[in-house]
Length: 93
Image 1 (spheres, rainbow, N blue to C red):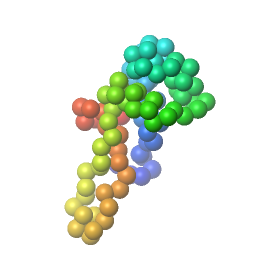
Image 2: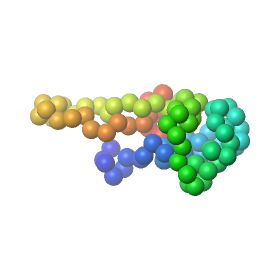
Image 3: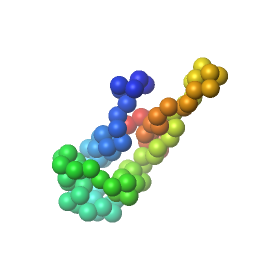
Image 4: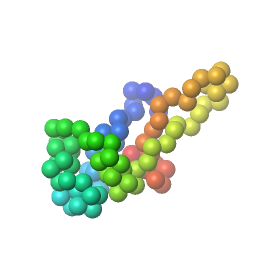
């Protein structure tokens, strides 16, 4: 995945919210976040705190994992780069 094709944490969570097919109210109740906060986040009016993102990720089965290291970058002493967001079953969201 190239840098340009990587999505932000917010974009990934918003996509997972949409794919959950739950109403904002239903998801907010299940995830333990205030409905107005989730509504404003999904509509792009505001961002969420890390604590809220944690709750949403936990409910939606999302987790943050480091990307797989490329052998050439490790051999050259390079860094692993940016982390990626993956669903718990290993497929990119």
